[in-house]
Image (cartoon, rainbow over all chains, first blue to last red; front, side, top):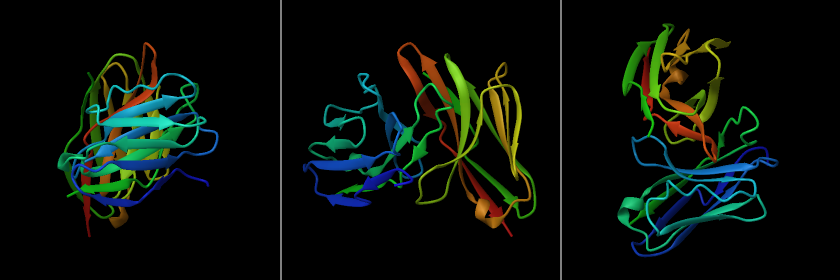
Length: 115
Length: 113
């Protein structure tokens, strides 16, 4: 597609369950980012993939969070044993990579609610 | 870390001009972005500055002073649809980390008729 897509758009889960969030970046974009945004808050960086380099995981809040990017394209963010404080909108963005202006384009987000 | 500050809220009337300021302190600075985010939607790209000066794009302009760690977004001829949160983001290239953006908390702009 023309833009970044994410699925599901909404996810309601029970505390303690695992969830997987998916991101399809713009075709040809080598960089992919995950952020989360709690109500009324700014964007919190989670993880950054650039080409075949090791990802920058410095923003992951705990070891319950992990992400992978298969084939340099689709990415999955996994949250294990979800907690209520994990409730937020999870945004994915992609860009051409650091050799360019590197504008990040965002997907519509996944709204996660942990009951 | 990075310190990126912008006002929390601003209000203005339709047809007016508003300036949203952003200050930052960081090493490895390599550009500043402004994004617009309507409630319940994803951020959308507005502007990018890496050199000092003013970039104009229709009703929106963005200014950067690298020496002062300062940027502003200028919105002219305000319309109701401009009511949104405006996010300032600084690109940091440092060590092996290239292209990472650090976002401010956003400025919620309300445009009144």
